[in-house]
Image 1: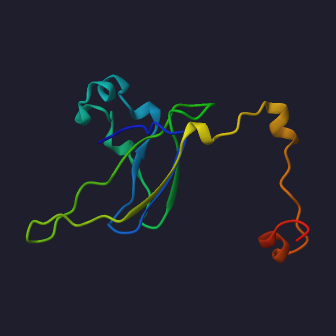
Image 2 (image 1 turned 30 degrees about the vertical axis):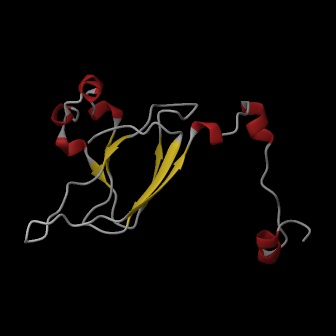
Length: 130
């Protein structure tokens, strides 16, 4: 089912199958159909559907992301079947980021934030001054 996630963001990777998650741009989505539940009418043009490969990590902005465009419209790939009719299992990993997990910062605060500086890889893994 084509949908947008109701999170701030999601990372997803498919470990099995022929393709990973399918997605499309907003200009290829009939949002009226998406709200009405008619999955076959949501996509305007099948040529506008993109797919990530198995093993690729896809970072998805959800509808609760605080700034910018709405969440990415995406779906799982079509089910595959064994010769005897059983569904081929799909192994995926999803990591969701709820909106409450995002820090609120002004543009000026965000510009002034800097990542910590480390002298070497040992300090990176142990923390500054350890």
